[in-house]
Image (cartoon, rainbow, N blue to C red; front, side, top):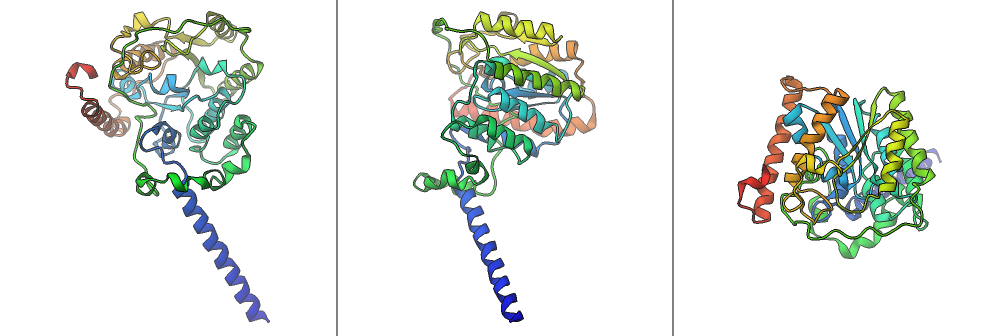
Length: 354
């Protein structure tokens, strides 16, 4: 009887291992890879491959990861930075990413882009997934899931992604096999690069809102950000990126300015400063004013970097062998990507990347 019991236990254990292996394999196969097309879905996970030595960490939506270049910050100011950005990143997601970041490093400054203050409630599962799936498991991820789920979502689907993506069988492509176990690097310390140009031809008229008050939920999370930063002796800096739309209403601006003043925070409205920055809306955007291209992001980063260093005291690590060695390979990848994109978009004028 004892021998039979042992054999039964061994068979059961082996079966469990086989089932777990198969489910893990199928999960890897069926989950979206985000290596081509919408590559932004792969950016959150890239942070964990970093050597954690960032003095500035940005959190927020596409207005950050498309408008700020950490390579430019490094080359011009020796600022070591990273953008933990994702598409339509909501303020509670930004907060939990800040919590998550502190599990690995403590920056001098957290920079938060205030556009997401316009969203009082969860929006879309697609965007939730692009932010949350790339996070490592922790209570920060658990809480981010709970705060972000729409009515049609279920927590168990985040724990076992195969429950959500099992129907992708018919959508599988060569990309799913090629990137089954490894992925290419898609961003530059969180920066999504575009070198092409699509000038601004018109700006949508701002439609009046029934209520301009930013939600209590958003203010609560902004207060949590402030408390988290002060608890860890980190400076919280608020920014509004230089994007022409979505519209940033004057009424929202006044509320952010009042909050920053009340709490002694630095707030930089880079949209208002776009003329000082030197943004040319005919040459510095790739999508008609929603986001900046490489030229615009470079200008914006030079301007913001000076503020971060002169007004926030962010360190200059140029000349430090440790930092120089880390950033050397990043710079090589950055400029190689510029050349690849020039070929992709048929750009031959070398001035496009200045």
